[in-house]
Image 1: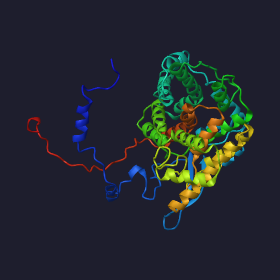
Image 2: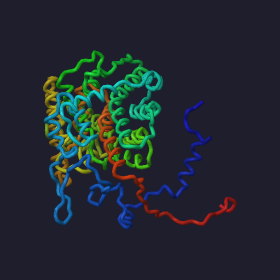
Image 3: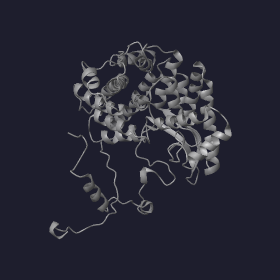
Image 4: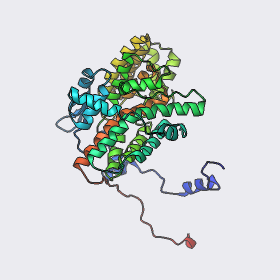
Length: 451
């Protein structure tokens, strides 16, 4: 039997769709007329405020006395601390674990607390009995984000009280998910490659003495080996992706779902579905594909005139996917700089030097500079590279397959999802219920025999 959805004749449905007047576009002027914020954005492009939080602040602009947006250097604040300071002073290979503690509990741990928390995480690394066989290996998926969703909802069945809504129980479930996501991601990748592409099935069980970053590299590599620099870079990437305020789409999805009183597993599944989208977590894949074509056409040549012509062709919808978009550039909040990108650039340079491929880093840095120049000349305002521009490059140097780019984002960001879910349970018990304005017609019902 065919698995394709079929209502006897697909053309019938097409005719229904074509006849309907309800699929016509809603003109943009109507949004202004009814004072509706399209995409939850103000007219100057900034986000509409949808809540209060003490978890994170995303700084990308200021406002002058007239209320106009003034571009500024970006910063990312976790519980009052700049991501730059957290990265600079992190524990060796364990900065992500310290970041998780900070996001969930609201303060930086002392040494004893840190050791105990790391043990709490490592005690939860292993998946439930037979979970690997029954929930991953027997049911591989072509898309790892979909698999991460199905495994998350399966873990619901292993929790002693999965629907418990008190904040402490939610916190425990969240820590368990944080600890298990790396194994689920890595195992799901190998299950896919083994089932669909007949590659060797490699299963390395997580080691309790390893940090999350070290375990990811250990589980992904056949020989389980990695350098200190590689572990340091991946640890930093996880820290940088761990949180980005309550307004980003996947976190907002989590909070909206959590406000209904649903279980944490369902809310996290919603966040994963949101992060899968190419306009959110999947953007780093678009960057990597774009850069692969540019590198194939230039062979890492840093000739400014050549790179400028490519940038202009992209903007003129005459290169790559002809969308006119330069992936990895621009952001909804950051204006002059994305601090995550600034930090990743430095890390990529160090890793490229260690691996003996500095020309690759120099090419990325040169292309970034040219894009900023050309876009600024055309649009009359600055643009910055965002976190996605260098993340794919870093993953490539770490030997991480493209299939895992977005799942790694989820492995990091679940820390922020849980932090906001818990916070909203503590201060606000109301279900989120925004309003929309109906602008369609009010019609009189016509009996079927008279239609």
